[in-house]
Length: 142
View 1 (cartoon, rainbow, N blue to C red):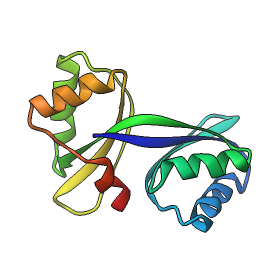
View 2 (cartoon, rainbow, N blue to C red):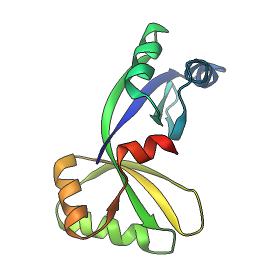
View 3 (cartoon, rainbow, N blue to C red):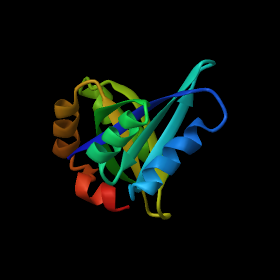
View 4 (cartoon, rainbow, N blue to C red):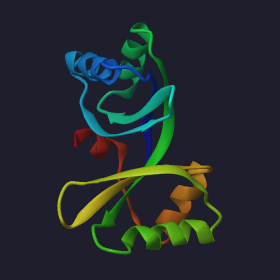
């Protein structure tokens, strides 16, 4: 249930994001989901890839500041209020979400990548409430 996410720190200058995508693509590594957050000085690319260990290694070799982070991916109905219901459950159980991002492959469901403060408790709570978690092997296939 735990998924490895890359966090790549990028200088805010033209071409840095392109460099990462070219390096990953040239190595045959697929990006399944990603988010970019920025400040005035740098950005953080958070990305789920088909081979996180290989991606970590090749990006470090290319002198990018990168690390692996454990996240959880929740599959949720793609309908109004579904995310709020899941977040209410987590909040009621004392699970703090540091950040999240989501994507939808169809009209029926959406995948929500969550970075909780306590990943084991988050998984336990979601499973106890019969919410569907995406397996790492399924996430990397997307």
